[in-house]
Amino acid sequence: MKRILLAVTGLMMLCMSAAQADPATEAAVKKHILDNNAYSIRELKSPGGQVSKEGSMEFWSSGGLLQEVPPADEVEEFDAFGLKPKHIHVITLVPGKVAVAMYYSEGAIDRKNSAAVPNYRTRATQVFVKEDGKWKVRAAHWSPISGGAGTSQTSVEN
Image 1 (tube, rainbow, N blue to C red):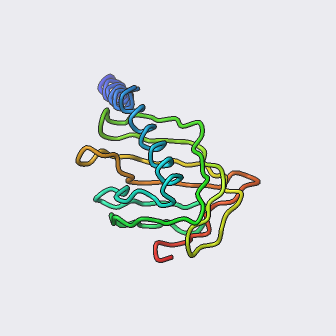
Image 2 (image 1 turned 60 degrees about the horizontal axis):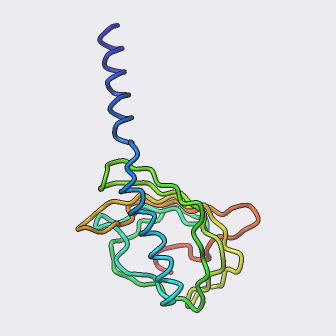
Image 3 (image 1 turned 90 degrees about the vertical axis):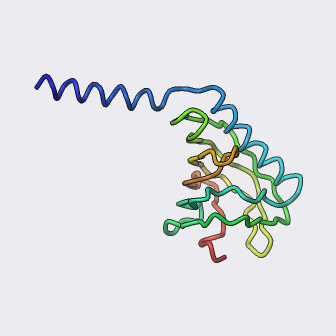
């Protein structure tokens, strides 16, 4: 029994140490999110190369099934982009290497060749990994907030 207790205690300590706060990682991921958003507002397109070389598994705010997003350098273009990330909270899993960001994204978005969403309001959770010195998305879950709407895109092929 004593061995089991020691093993469980050790495992709990290992898990807790793996998710310690790291202000530098948290600030870098938050800056990455804000910089990408500012770029999209300014350029009316998304910055390319945001997905991990391993791809990303994502649930989108439009609903539907889990999407496997390939590691392409695709750039989304917009007729209008007025989203704003709010209340960004970052949890470091491995300092300087892996972090989870949770935040709200609100505003209006009009993707080229897609239906406009004038009342976009979602909760976002994104897992970021550091690859070749840059933060990349490895997994994401976007879900609409009550009274708001998600995107109109339902698959990678759209």
